[in-house]
Length: 266
Image 1 (cartoon, one colour):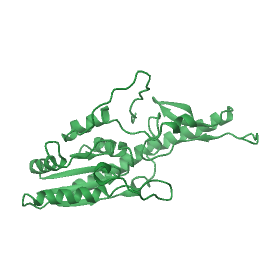
Image 2 (tube, helix red, strand yellow; image 1 turned 45 degrees about the vertical axis):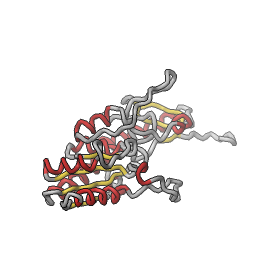
Image 3 (tube, one colour; image 1 turned 120 degrees about the horizontal axis):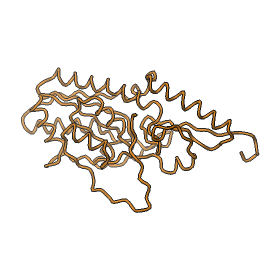
Image 4 (cartoon, one colour; image 1 turned 90 degrees about the vertical axis):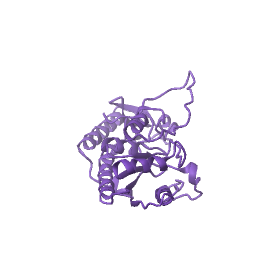
């Protein structure tokens, strides 16, 4: 561009965490949700095969946003506890996840826990390790929660049989489902259309169920986004699981602040 060459720059937002701002969803996200549900079914089967006190824990991707964990849990309907980065984890007390989980196990003889990899930084602290991509290492939240659950049950003279599942990259390393295949075709075609029309420095994405062009600087300025702990997605999680709602107090938005709707799978 600085040399005046006839070059167009077009982008297509890519993230399995679905945390690119403005767009309804990133390509591959619905496929990842589908793959994550297979892992949740595995965790449920393991928990059911170890009653009483059988617990299946599955850790899903989500460094700073819990969209994948939340959507997979909602689509599954078999989850008793969801932990995401946006909502602080309280271990004990009236709103503690440990007494809640033990009550759940006593009612159903087993339980399934879904957690995002970025959850629990308020408990374990922020890591100083940085990978080659510049991303800060996440705390070992899965094994920490497993240990806390085991210790809590032992305090009652009981043994919890816990199966911990970490599917890692296998959730995103699967063939695209039909919806994502169609979406990728639409993104690719519209990226070419924008470039041929003379546009540059733009990204193409689905916004309010319509393919639109977004200026790249504006798109990256507010990304990555996070899931609202007071939005409908988290409210549905709490309603489905019955878990304590430990979301932080809601901060009223300024009059000039733009409030974007939560992403959807429509």
